[in-house]
Length: 168
Image 1 (tube, rainbow, N blue to C red):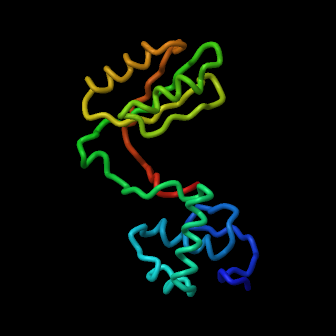
Image 2: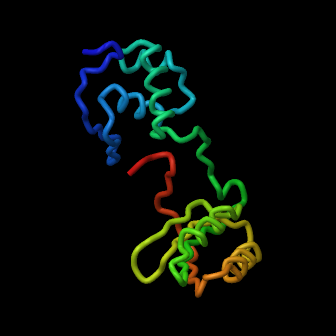
């Protein structure tokens, strides 16, 4: 075991059906704790996984610096906040300008996710809206963007699973 409390073995740990990538066992255990409850102190996590709070702090700092932990946030219930409409919009873009168009769409406040994809469409957008009018304005804004050829919007009827706090 090295000074940071790690055996040096790289493992994959499962969290339910979630596999958390290529970090050592101690870091994986820390990530699992923070995925469960990100408000825990270093001391609480250390007690639960059997390492020092200094080890937890240094591992968290390392993972932040390496971009494994990108930011800390709250997981919201959008419907309780009045965002009753969830849509998935497919966008076809001309002249290979997917990244530019996607970047502009990512800046729009209603977007939750913007993905460059394979298949018949070039971009998929996940967005939330309070009203149909908001959705209408959003769609018209996208259609006005240069290089956007067409959109196809899918209205979500029921959300079976939506958990942005877990990594697949």
